[in-house]
Structure formats: C-alpha cells, structure tokens
Amino acid sequence: MMNPGIDDGRGSPRLDGRGTVTGAVPLRATFRDVFAVREFRAVWLAELLSVAGDRLALVALTLLVYDRTRSPLLAAVTWAAGYLPWVIGGLFLSSLADRRPRRSVMVTCDAVRAVLVACMAIPHVPIWALVALLFAVTMFAPPFESARAAVTTDILHGERYALGTAALQTTMMTGEVAGAVGGGVAVAFLGVGPSLVIDSATFVLSGLLIGLGIRARPPAAAPETARASSLARIRDGFHLVFGNQALRILLLIGWLAAFYTIPQAVAAPYVDRLGMGPIATGLVVASTVFATMIATPLFTRFVGARLRLTLMGPLAVLTCATLVLIALRPGLVISLVIFSASAAFGVYQIAANTAFVIRVPNERRAQAFGLANMGVIVGQGAAYVAAGAAAEVVSPAVVIAVGGAIGAVVAVVLTLRWRHVSPSGGRHAAGRPTGHAATGTSVPLRGSR
Image (tube, rainbow, N blue to C red; front, side, top):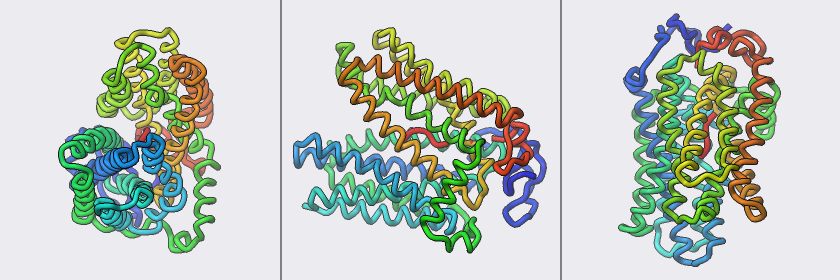
C-alpha cells in the first residue's frame, strides 16, 4: 500500500488525500516539467525571497549592533539570535503546518516577519530590542520552512518531487548567498534602516506569491490530532521520527552535515595557517556551498531514482571521508578542491530527503521536517563550537580531518544499518512496502543553513 498523494514512479494514477484519482506522473521528468507547475513556481520564488530576507536581516542587524557597540561579543550574540530560535520554532511551531492549512501558515509567517523587520527599521530602537526582534523573526522561519516542505509534496509527485526538492535546496543556498552579499552591499550604500525596509518588502512579496499562487488545502492532520497539547504533539513527533528504525537512520544520515560543514567554522584560522587573508577565507567558505549548489540539480536530473537511493550511503561516507585528506596540510588550491569534492558528494541529501518524505504520513510531515531541520541546526552549532574549541589546541587542519573521520565512521555504520533495514531500497514507516518506495523508484532532509 502506498502513501496517499505519492505517485508510484511508473506513471500510474495516484490518489489524493481524499482517495480521488488525480492522474499520472511520468517516470522521468525534467526541470522544465517541474517549473511548468504554477504552484511550484510560486513556492520556489517565495522561498528565494524568504531565505534571502532572513539572511539580509541577519547581516544588516549584526553590522548595526557592531557599529553601535564595537563589541565582537554582542555582534556574535546577534548572529546567534538568528539561529537559536530554530530550536524553539522546530519544537513548538512546526506542527502548525499540519494542524492548520499550510498556505495560511506560510502567509501568516511572512506577514508577521514583515511587521517585525519593519519595527527594526524604526530609528533609535535599543540594541536589546533589536536582538529580541531578530529572535522573533527567525522563530517564524521553522514553521514557514516546514509548511513549504510539506506543501511541496502536495504539489509535486514522483520524479517531479525529487527535481523540485533539488531546485529548492539550490535556491535556498543561492538565497543565503544573495542575502548575505545583498545585506552587505545594501548596508554599505543605503544604510541599515533602508536595508531593513527592503527586507520587510521581501517578506510581503513572498506572502503575496504564496497567497495568490497556491490553492487552498484543508489541514492535513485530523481534528483530534489538532486538539492535542503541545507537549503531546512534541512527544508524538519524536516517537514518529525516532521510534521507526528506517526514519531514524535517514534522519541521522541527514544530520551528518554537522561533520562535513566543519570547514566553515574554522575557515579563518585554517586560512591564517596558510598565510593568507580574508579573500582566501571567503573562497574556503564558498567552496563548501558552491559545489553543492552546482552538483545537486545535476545529480537529481541525470541519476535515476533507484541509483540515487543506492548511492546515498557511499556518498555520505565520501562526503566526510574526503575531508581526512586535509590532514596532509595541502596548499590553498588543493584545499579548495578537497572542500569542493566533499561538498559535491553532499548531494546524497536529496536521496535521504526523498526517502524520508515517503515514509512520513502527510498529516505529520511538517512536524517531521521541523524536527529534522532543528537537528541539523543544533548539530552544526554544537559541532562548530567543538571545532572552534579544538582549534585552540591543535591545528585547524587536524580539526577538519578528525571531524571528517568521525563523520565517515558514523556514515559507514548508518549505511550498513540502512541496508539491513531496507535491502531493496525502502520500506514504509509501518513496515509495509510502499509501492515505488519499496523498489527504490521514487524519490528525500534539508542541508545546512
């Protein structure tokens, strides 16, 4: 029995959440097919605006705080305020997108963020209030992202979903880069206030795109689920994700990002050991993102769904193991090649993401995505702090290599366990084969933020 609303990967008719036959999706699809879907175009553009707006606000506000206080500590606290809310939002707010119409959740999140960012632009707002506002703005990102991820599965099916996920992940990375660069440029030429006004406008536009471009759908969760207490929903969410072996393994495979993104955390001291400056640091950080940006759509478009699932484990191992080469202390050029190769192998996240989606019931999908994203953020934060502390004692190259080695060992264990749990490419969360999920012909966790 296959999941409602998911095509069987062979072009056969599929059922929507009400048991209605909705047509067929071809086995092979192209990005043109994906972007031909009007609702997906709205989601894609809204995602770009939303992510870019998040990053623009974070950069602009961090620069403002440092300019007012000249305190690196307060600037760091401001930067952290853009990440910590993912824990709160992931735990308490992500399930809103299951209990409420997902389009309404996304529009509401954008409207609230637009107002909060506009409040930041008011002159002479105290520093503590600015940080609090940024904290609140970021706290509405997890429910937005969870709703966006869940509604994508309503819009796209089969191979189109895999390609759409690749496009959205690439867009997310592009939005973060564009937002960071745009934030710096906007602050330099316009000032912080106008930059924040622009940021507020991005959320308004995102909300309009979602409201006008996506059709209304009823809540995915049953009424009795919606009435459950927050703690009960959190408990049930953890039980869903961690109580099933297949979901647990897929989640942990996605969380390997904490190990292979360590080079971002120690880029500055690593480059300093090479005797180079800020430009080289920027190149190192860019190499850990750009290669994934390029490889993700290519991997999804030209590698079949069954092969993607087969390659998931080996690529996860290679993503981390490649970083062990940094122990040889190469120069900058070879280092960039190693970091880029590691990042390119990270395309395995597409297979992990799709396999995860197939196994999560639609009425719990947004909450599951929220917990997955929260784990990535928390794991990366812990890994970055540990890497920074270790780099005070040993060289950054050793820190990167050891982190990669630990990640590779964990990846090997998870790969072996995955093959034991799902030798033929997939199994339903309840233990029943799920059509294409059982044969590996259908297609995933979000990567790093």
